[in-house]
Image 1: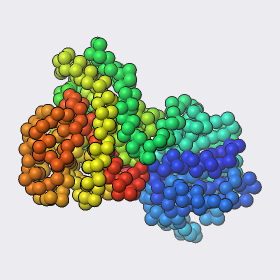
Image 2: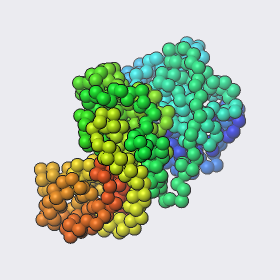
Image 3: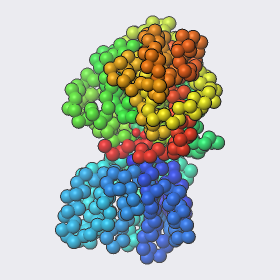
Image 4: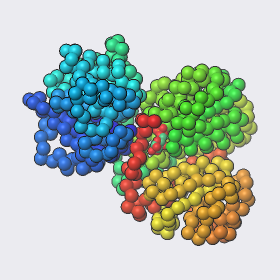
Length: 614
Ligand code: G6P
């Protein structure tokens, strides 16, 4: 949540900041702002506005945006309404210091009270303003340097932060720090870039440093010092980025979400590359090699995640139990972390996260580690916090996902989970050689089968046209299709604001059936082979109450064709792999409905892609 970007060097900072904010806008878009230090350092110029980065650009037109040092922020509001006053950057009382912040200062009220008692008056309702006032207070009263004042202030702070601070009196310097929220430093020739992720940096330099928790950076144009908040100097570890710039552009598609849906054949191929060994009936997951011997006696796996990643965890429950015969639990990270769960060193806890930064998932993983569990990650963003804290993991390699509603990251997560389940099944000897061979063969066929679903886009669009004004929608599925139904409902509600609920098809009888009448669209993910006739019965139950049935069925289905109002056919595959295909028409349906309703598909209201607050 919230995106931050900063620059120090010879270039004009403003264009870098604006472009960077546009790249980071997926992290929040309630308000946007920049601050710049002009050449004479007479004052810190701050421009901020409630709204999006494009509104900020318009607002700034004609104003002084000169300066080679500056920073910008795009906000997802936590404390205080999403208005201009609460927008970042925030200034210290007399405008000497400016701060941008991603995170939450939990003890801000106590700190605010103390500072008020000392005569400070606050302008905003934010926790961030309290921090910059605290730095200012320490700076003035102790005579310490800027960096030392920031460090001392951070020692008083409880909470999570990635911050950047500028000073008009120390005008060749940027101070940054992180605890719990991500911060990447791009290292150029006599210039440095800072951002919440690498996307604003990649076109200027590929050399980056991921700041660790409890570290701060003191950056001058030709100098970088990293130390801990405890004041120990650290040796920076510079890594090379593997990003491709095109992945950050829309590439001719109207929205990032549509581009990302259509990228799925390729992103799944990228995810499978080098990992599937059809000839010797095996799977190679380099990151897990060290742990392979432990899979044999594994007692339990707990998957943790949030949102779409939690849905991928639900698919994993079916996969790991069916293929590898390992008991599985799937937990919302936010519930798990506060429930005092029973975890032992026999447990394997696997966090699933596109961003690798979700605050609840990180905290749940930390808890699992404290309790002695082995911890793995399934993440998309290379170098993010979860991969850096886990014992082992597998990257999904889906490439940057910019649309807030997750699509290609979900199918890449499921692909990795299939590979992991297969690896464990092979080691534990729970599957016949024939089934392993068929699954591996089918897996490599999945990208082409998804292409065939994408070819049906026009048909899906026509169905979207019919149901775009529905106030509610029900999604049903059984077995492997149940998590897909949940994911389909989530896609629709996230981006079109239509109330949608996903349910196990048979559970419909215990409540949702009361909602069904001739106005209720019911999307049934019926691409089942196992228990097919049970799904048919559920469809009959909906039909008997005059619900409108849109069914996702395997190609050639004749029974449901006669019952449903609309069918969307998808290529058949092994049932364990079918979520990879059956979710795609649901993504497209949600996308088209949202576009037809005039919604902002890539940046739906109130949401953010990377949820770094709990
Ligand atoms: C937010 C995003 C979702 C995502 C969830 C978990 O809610 O909008 O798309 O599924 O966070 O994020 P993660 O990065 O941990 O997968």
